[in-house]
Length: 106
Image (cartoon, rainbow, N blue to C red; front, top):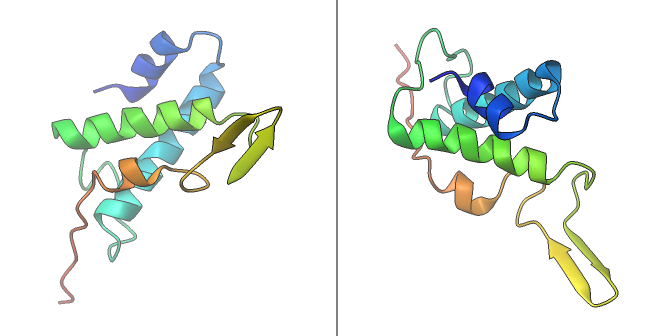
C-alpha cells in the first residue's frame, strides 16, 4: 500500500513533504511497537503487508493530522470544552492494536 498517496488523497491541503514526514512517523510508531527489541527493522526488512499493520499506519497518520496545533497536550479546558489526549503523540487505543514481537539474540 502506498501510504503517502492514501494520505495525500484524504488530506489534499497538506504538502507532499509534510505528508511524507507524517507517514514516516507513523511507520516509526508501528515498528517501535511491533518490534521493540529490534531497532534496525524497517520497511525493507519487514514490509507492512498485513491489514492491521496497514490500518495502524493510516490511523497513526490521521491522529497526527488531527493533533496539529495542539503539540503534546494532555488536557485542555476552556469555556466548558475539554480536550484530552490519552497519550501525547499516539492514542492508547491505537497502541493496543499492535502485539509486540520480541527478537531472539543469536
